Image (tube, rainbow, N blue to C red; front, side, top):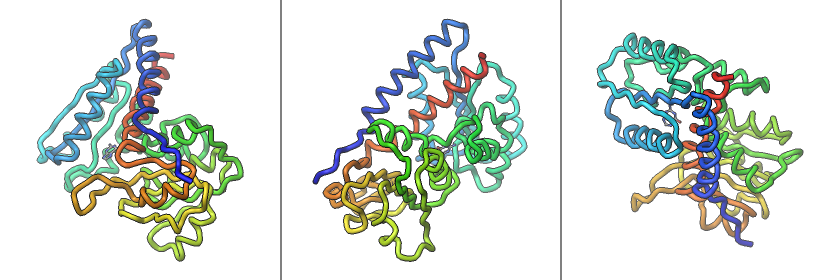
Length: 283
Ligand code: GUN
């Protein structure tokens, strides 16, 4: 069997068309959804990410503002900027790009963002809302994974989902989202014993570790669905995920590629969250 590819670019295009239409509807009521992206310092990868986020907003008819600050900016000054954005009626979503310089307490900055504008879904109020099934913003990468499963009509009820990785922004929220859809969820991590014995039982596997070849064909049950959140470089400098794509696609029923899989979905869900924030604020 050769797996069906879940195309993150194609799904993003479809979802962004819907975002653009909903943004247009809000605009006709006099509200333009607005995202503020805050970048501190000159991390080259972060500069690319924020540029992509701002461009995606423009392409979908959302207003966006990019605030760039020197790496020497004080924590107090950044907290003051976040507070000003919390009160800015043109801004419905606030994203402070991570990582922040080491002299700034990132968690303190995240907690300063109003939960109503926390479109990254990193605030503890957002995490608590996800855990309890209350309305709130979901972190964009696992949310994008859920949309990918939805796009293939996958019913998670009673299925065994295995998440490899337990980060606060992917692994843990991913597990909660799968649980909310009635999957039986196992979270694996660096101390897990016999990972292969667990992944072989999985109907769905989400690999979110940040290490190449964490998941190989011999670890996958025939017909399983495999989502690859990894973003790594191989020896030739080529972008690759956590999954041995060529091997696993011979065993899985569906698989996401890297690039062109989960990656584009992350930005798409940021647009969805920003739109949602604007819709909630205007109701
Ligand atoms: N750095 C890398 N990914 C992200 C993200 O999704 N949000 C923020 N704020 N920073 C990041």
